[in-house]
Amino acid sequence: MISGEGPRGAIWCAAAFRLPFGEVAAYFPPHFQQMPTVFIKTYGCQMNERDSEAVAAQLVARGYSIAGEESGADVVLLNTCSVRDLAEQKALGKMQALVGQARKRETGQVFGYLGCMAQSRGAELTQGTDGVQLVVGTQKFHRTGEHLDALLAGRETVVVDTAEESGSQSRLADHPLPGAVSGRRQVSAFVSIMQGCNQHCTFCIVPFTRGGERSRTIPEIVAECRELVARGVREITLLGQIVTSYGRREYPPEGGRSGFVQLLDAVHAIEGLERIRFTSPHPKGYGEDLVEAYGRLPKLVESAHLPLQSGSDRILKAMHRGYTRDRFEAIIGRLRAVKPRMGITTDIIVGFPGETEEDFGETMSLCRAVEFDNAFVFKYSPRRDTPAATMAGALPEEVIEDRHRRLLDTINEIGKRRYEALVGRDMSILVEGISRRNPARYEGRTRCNKIVVFAGAPRHVGQVMDVRIDRVGTFTLYGDPAVVGLGEREVGLGESDVVVETASLKG
Ligand code: 5AD
Image 1: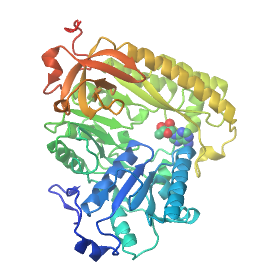
Image 2: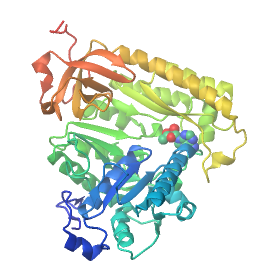
Image 3: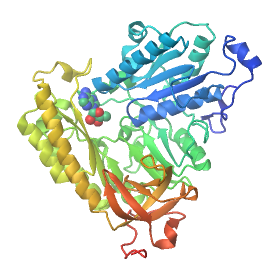
Image 4: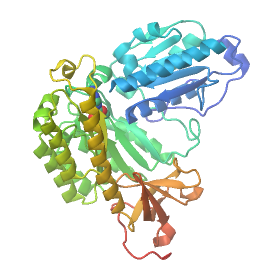
């Protein structure tokens, strides 16, 4: 069965099902008694997760089944990340191991690379590891199913498809039906709003792997969000490489509101949607219109992931980031003025070429001044074709290691303090399902994007509840359903995380 056009243009997949042998035989060689199973392993960011989900939905719609593990799957696809060399090496190592095992056991499995590394390395990936038959780039995810059909039916032996395709940003609207891919009810969903990036930070490979900025239309995005909400999704995270650049060409500012804020307004109007998040913004996209949106739009949660990269103006300039340390601090100040309990996280690179101890000290001091709730700290990794890869001043590995450890210690110390300050507070959470850390518990997310683990029940999933925080773990909160209405509320729009600060009834 092939996917069809849904009522509003998005493609919605049919439930997972397996074709009877007669129909399978028409497509594939006789050793396939049932439609093939596919395992997809995802490396990297939420965009990649979302792409994998859309590929899975597309394959299910064609009759394939999604396997929970690689062993025994007829097809194994690695959806790759190129942002640092480590991510590429992980995928390459994994593929080598998979192909080696398959050859030894003569499983006849089909292997493929999808996504960013597939885009940047192309055909070379089929040459190094004998056995890789499929390479699908970032503008061709929507063709994965037809390529697999051709490979499995023996019409092709190797497919490398990494060409650019105009309009590809709109061809990945499939979402798996509940239960078709994972057993979890989907409370929170990712929606891709754009692809690519025009910023050209000197360290970053993304413009080469994802291409230039291409935005989907507001009606298309709203239709996809509506459909998700109709299926029970309550929180939507709008995704893009730089979401704040959304619709720069297509939607000129209207009444002082950028294309991105116009999109936020449109998604906010969807009835039944409880929360809106987005990632990642660029600090330079935080104009007054966006800051003001946090105060104006109650569904827009108090959370921002604002990539800093460095606290040194000299390094920020060499990185081509387009803001200064002062400007970054001013943005955080304005956000906290509108929403004092805003959860703020960031990305930081240590060891950029030419980074002195003084530059690094500026990053440390900015982190202490801003007090992020958490941060991803990366060791600079030279990427092919990027300007920074050939800059003078490459740092020795030990220096990068040392700065990485010192910054992580600082981030952890600040994060611990900020999490501990929440003990005793009542916070509003959206319950996502069984805890990934402890299967005997449930977990939800606060508006400021912190995970809360608590003793819940299946009926809580998808509910907004108040829980009292009673202890903290490493970047995790533990809570009790709080006083008000046994902790359950229908809708919690417009409230901050902190609901009430009364004594616990249980005390
Ligand atoms: N080296 C190290 N970290 C990088 N990032 C992007 N490119 C590199 C690189 N070459 C980090 C940035 C970005 C995050 C997704 O990955 O911090 O925000």
